Length: 105
Image (cartoon, rainbow, N blue to C red; front, side, top):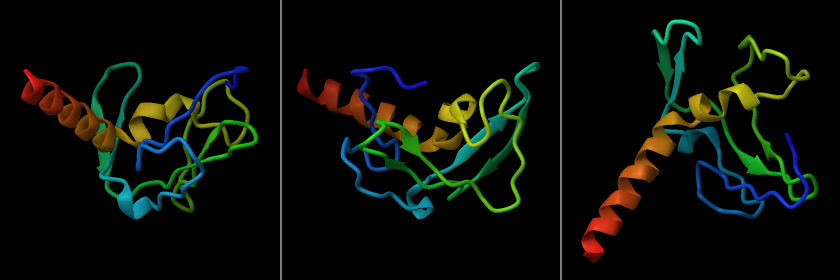
């Protein structure tokens, strides 16, 4: 997952340093069935986020007791859920960027 020279951004606070973003800043995670695309559930304040400046990895904690199918990844690697965990924050960021672009023209 980690490539030399790669950069990471925190999807909750949009910073590239190690500023911690608590789960309370998570607008909502959305989960879908990978095979069918069917919506499963949405959970506000699902996970936190912080960049590990040594490894360059985005670190997160999911709710206690949550069991997820992580696929072929090692235990604790949630790469499969990069979009799902921070879905609403990503959507808001896209909306904000489009609005900023359109306001400049």
